[in-house]
Length: 557
Image (cartoon, rainbow, N blue to C red; front, side, top):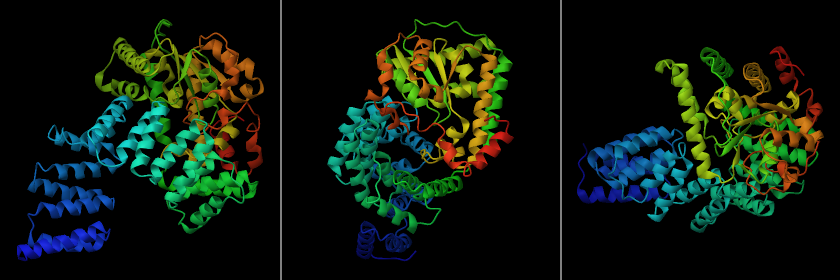
């Protein structure tokens, strides 16, 4: 230990804090290291080193310092709050959940505590998270993030007016906060309010021109022209970055969209490939995991030889599941149904998958009998129906959780009154549309490689073939091309199958102003068009890896 008089410790600490506040973290860490040798039991040193590590994204180092600070001052609210704030930034929410359990009720009165609890609740219940975020705001929680998280949660449950208000509250605190601006822009776009969306997207790019996703949001709202000043900015940014940079993918997708808008088709696929390679390197796809999951689902269904339950059409609300591959036309079909006066368009609700997976994944350990499994599935169905009733008012609700096809037979057991619409599209058009789409990073990992798209598509097709043989007449299959070519006949068939009387409003789906949170948000606000049918033919040579793999996997064109 290097002894220092208290006055010198105080002076050195003030110098370190000044460097820290100025963002000169390297200098601050050197000064704090000297202080640690002189005053190893000074909790403030570990606390500030934890803050620096948190700001640098070094969660392991930050956690170590916060733990040492808590050993010295176990009940200090500021230390717990900073520790929780760091855990809230970590991509693994379990870290925050674990830390909150340790805190217990000791911070119940802290204004930020319900914000952290709300973040944990997001994956379980958006409604609970919304209540917690609002409580945090009422208690004067610090920072802008609580308003943004509240707005995001409100967006997720379709309360667009309240979400816009929450984004506005965030922007009152920080008018140039790029995340609030771009998220509000995306929501306005999904509501069809394009001019307002474009205004906020421009502001987001201006506020933080280093974020590739802001350029993608901007390009997704409008038709880009060659003289657009933002086009040159995004190209300059793209050219200056290494190909492994996380901003490359959104920038490349934005530039691909711009190339299509400006008629530069020779550049289009090159940008798509650059984005795909960047994402595939960062988020590799393991096809065997999906093959195994599909095989296990089929095996389990055979093993239990479940009897088909009687449909109880008196139960409300009645779910209509619209499922299929991404970019197959599921949003269009849902929009047609949601334009009926008796139907609420739920979008990709995601309210069933977790509970259903939990039942199916634990059956071997639980050694369930057929009757026990059916009872558990019906309980899952009752809980799902209650969640629908809490959010929607109309007697029918669409659920476009597209992966429903994977466990369709079991969902039918849980919800006997449900209807299922499986949407199909020409494999090459579907593959091309998947490949050119910019999904949330880390999701749909197969989409970043044409051969993997083929493999995943064959898993989907095999699963549908299985359900067709096991539960015939329990779902309908709709071809996107047929809907485009004969809209009224196909729409009438879908509406009738769903248990609804016909309404002409279903043909005016493009006039429906509901919030549409998918990549097809702009398409479903237009009358039916046929330009996307056969679009893949313009890129036959580029799509060769998909075609060859798809055929080798047993697919048929």
